[in-house]
Length: 254
Image 1 (spheres, helix red, strand yellow):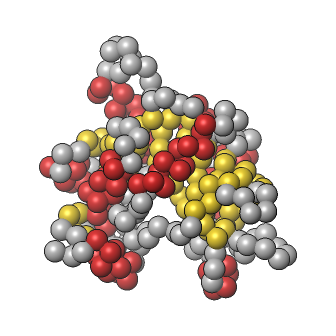
Image 2 (tube, rainbow, N blue to C red):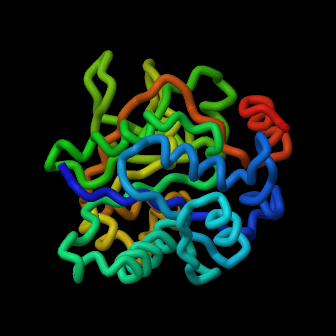
Image 3 (cartoon, one colour):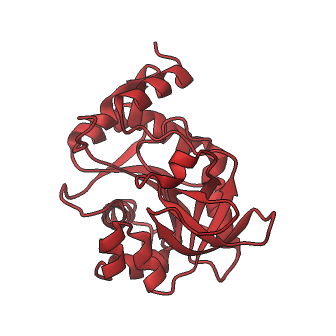
């Protein structure tokens, strides 16, 4: 089990459907601050926001948090957190202080303001198995229209009947697997072993990844083992005005 986890929250101002999304008010605080609070409440390790500019960094620092400003043009959140990891360690001079490098990096999406902190730990706990490179989450899909929706990513999991975790075999936007049985909605929260994240970001996108537009397929192509914990419900991701209003109701608009 990794002993020195670091939680990183990638955030950028470039959202098209909700411009300036990280700074939108939810419950009397910017959304990115709410996500930072949820990550801190997990009590797993240090938390920092990996942002694309000073605007987000200023807000987080004002709230009492830590932020790392990264390049604005990263192709993915994984690339952003890799740069942030390097800068954070250098700023803290962790090696010089004899603390050693962070051996696990938990990528918490910056648009999950109502996330249950226990779910962060659920993904991290999957790394107790030394054969697991990446831990992530999924929840059973109940509605037929969600099974057909291509914006909902399905995780194909090798799991015993009635089990609560298993190895990911594939991810797709299509309704899969076929036949009778549940389908699972993949939740994009990842706990990486450090060496797994390094291999991932240093490898070019693969054809299947580009075809499905799912970067986790690159990890599978590298034979990295992704373990999935099945949870009860999908946490609310804020992508639309309707999602924003729902989050405000859940956290109490002030």
